[in-house]
Amino acid sequence: MAAIPQEYHDLFERTTFAHVVTVFPNGMPHASPVWVDYDADDNRILVNTERHRQKTRNVERNPAVAASMLDPDDPYRYLSVSGEVTEMTTDGAREHIEELAQRYVGGEYPSEIVTERIILRIRPERVFGSESNE
Image (cartoon, rainbow, N blue to C red; front, top):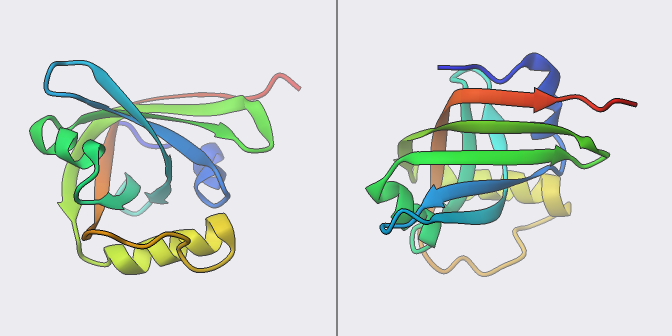
């Protein structure tokens, strides 16, 4: 297991979008832009989604995922993570999406929630980051 280096923790405190890649049943990759969070105490990347979404169905079959994110202020600074979804939980998922909405849009979650919210807890296995050359 790899840890997210401290110098990248700020990416999870700002409006950083991640692209999360899951795997379709036929082996093809599926990429989704998502809001992202990090549980530093448990070393897990958190993705909040709805139960009916394709990424949820994909990780139910195959927990292997990858995520990459660019610093919103410097696109040459990025973090790339490969790992596994170790838990899918509904516990606290509604509250979590509202916390993320405060960070990303400065208010309530902007869309109607159609199905049950789920938090995907991703354990990093490989982590690669690149700092800007500025």
